[in-house]
Image (cartoon, rainbow, N blue to C red; front, side, top):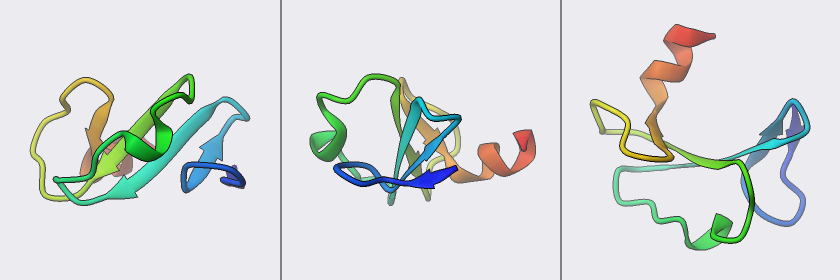
Length: 60
């Protein structure tokens, strides 16, 4: 895992970019980044590339 340099908060496996934020977080910062996802707080289920933080904790 590495911290994002140009955009996104961090990268995993060198190809997945993650931006962390609340339920209102938009894709503006990672709009043109392939394999990018938002890890959002305060959402129950994933919607598209917006994943709830608790799911990542369960899957890890």
